Length: 348
Image (cartoon, rainbow, N blue to C red; front, side, top):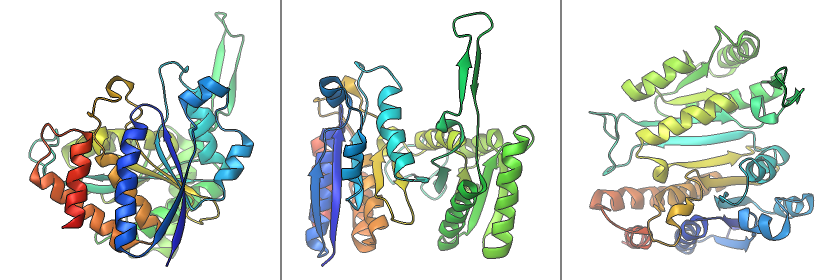
C-alpha cells in the first residue's frame, strides 16, 4: 500500500473552506483505491504573518522538504501589503524547491458556460506549461535615484540554457503523451530577440532530435491570446516563459468558466523536492464564511495531485465525478453543497 505525505497549507480567506472539501475527496479515493495519505497542517499565510512576522522561514522550508507534495489553499489578505506574501511564500517555495514547471490545464467541463460563443467541451481542452523559476520573476534589476525625476527602474528577463531546455523538454514529453501531439511555443521573437532566440533554438533543436512525433508550432504571445478566444481548439500543449505564462493562463481560465474552475501545479518533475498544488482563485476575502466559494478548482487540483503521484485511476474517478456533478447542475449551490454532490458521485 502506497503512503503519501502531504503538507497542507489552508492559508487565508476561503482557503480553509475549499481545502477541507478537497481533503474529503482525497481521503475518500485513498480508501477506495487502497493507498494511504498522511497529512500535516501548516499555518503559513497572511494571518500567520501578521501574528508572527514570518512569511516562510528557512527552518519551515526545510520541514516542507520532507513531504511528497504540498496542498495549498490560498495566500493573501487585505491587511498585508501586496508582494510580501507572494514573494515570501509562493515565489520562495517555487524557487527554493526548484518547482520549475507551472502546469495549468484549460479544460471546459460539461455544464459550464464559456464566454466564447459557440464553443463546447470539444473545443477547449489544452494545457499550458509555464516556466516557473526564471524570467522577470527572479527580480534581477533595481532602482536608482528613487523619488526623483531621474529615477530609473530595471527588471530583467533572464534565462539560461538549463532553465529553458528542461522546461521545453517537459512540454514535449507531455505533448507526446496526448492524442493530438502538438506543442506550441508562445513567445515574442520579433521584439525580445535575445531571450526568444534562445527559446526558439532550444525548442527546435530538442523537437527535431528527440520528439519527431510531436508537431511544432510557434505563436507570438499577442496572436496566441487572440486564437485562445477565437479558435481555442487549435491548441493542445503550450509552452512559454514565466511572465507570458502568468498572463495567458488567466485568459485561459476565463474561457473555461472562471477562476473557480482553474487549478495548477508547481512541479519539480524530478521529485527531488515536493511539488505544490493549488487552485488559482486566491483568498477571496469578500466571501469568506458565506458558503459561496466554488470548491471545484480545488477538487481539480486534487485530481492533478493524484495524477502526479501516480494514482491515475483515482484521478480519473475524481475527474468523472466532477463531470457528473456539473452535468447534473450546480446552479445556486453553495460550497458545501457542491462538495456533497461530488462526494455522492464518487460513491455511486
